[in-house]
Image (cartoon, rainbow, N blue to C red):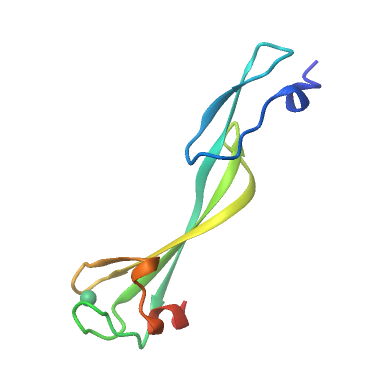
Length: 105
Ligand SMILES: [Zn+2]
């Protein structure tokens, strides 16, 4: 009964957020998209905050993104990383990471 839904749907992996895909055979909506997975945090000990100069106050957060089908993660497509200083509350995007920070990740 549900056979053929996957084969007949048009899968578009491009684009950041979820999109509706219309199945050709069954006239039924399938929901594909990307969603963030579990967050992993790591304290970067011994690393100095580039903003306030405190040591060991940076926490790095890594979050993987998954392709999902009906909100069930299918596979991982990338990891986004950022860091935050618990002292000055400054957030850092991956592009702003210092060499020390990258080394400690
Ligand atoms: Zn700081």
